[in-house]
Length: 128
Image (cartoon, rainbow, N blue to C red; front, side, top):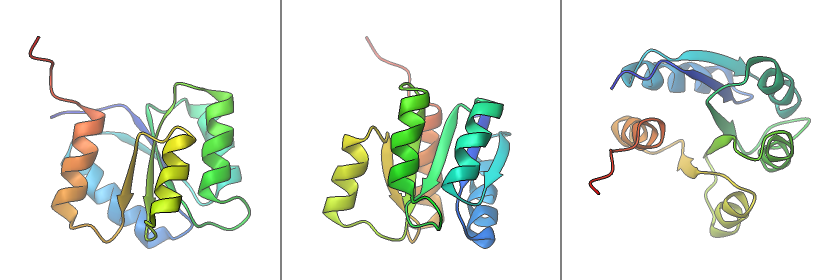
């Protein structure tokens, strides 16, 4: 796979952004744009028009659910993947109802995160 689009990576923890960036570089050569909170994410989304947003749920100032809701108001077609350490049924269902494309736990093994992201970024061709 050789994805080379823009990915907006939103997480308040710099080490998590670094970890996820390394995984993303395994599945292509994306331009990675980072934001440390929801407010920065909204500004960066409008300025950079990324192909995909990877969004943490728990952040200061504006949490991921509110950020997701506002991103969908700005662009109903934006592709948002929630990345979080919390994955209770209620938060997963709420994120999906708000329009998230997927929900990935941060403690998922690195290879599984890479596989899940690559399936969303570059889905298999239809066999029809």
